[in-house]
Image (cartoon, rainbow, N blue to C red; front, side, top):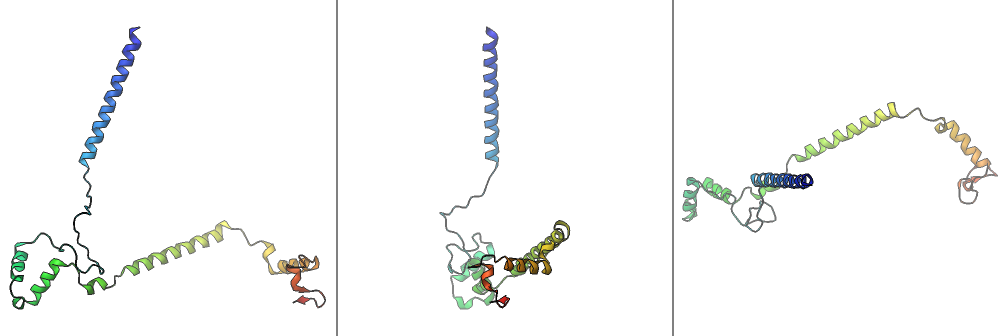
Length: 175
């Protein structure tokens, strides 16, 4: 009488331990994985033609040299050199409008991929024609189709709207 109760107690204890072990393993794995999730509630930098003034500058962490340049920016702009003005622009924007509008050479990759796929498809069709399909059936030869057409005309197949409706039986020619 005691044996079944003891077995059920040990089975439930084993099940409980395995579930708790599985749960602790899953929790430890989920805590060790850190995924970067973009917080869309914060302002973001967008380098796009339709957003000329991004919410935040391109460079957020300034070096000492960049901080000195930002301090110099607060003064007279005529004292800044062209390189310093360009460096200030690059702190705020990643690309200029001309650089954003400049085309890329991605079209070459796409066109190359299309030609590769067309070539592969052509090779596949050639292989099928040589090794998969048999010879052309005799019913597709011009002699056979001519005889078949004459037989259909002689049998007057579909004389109202069909094939025979376009044949003139008196002159023996197509209407």
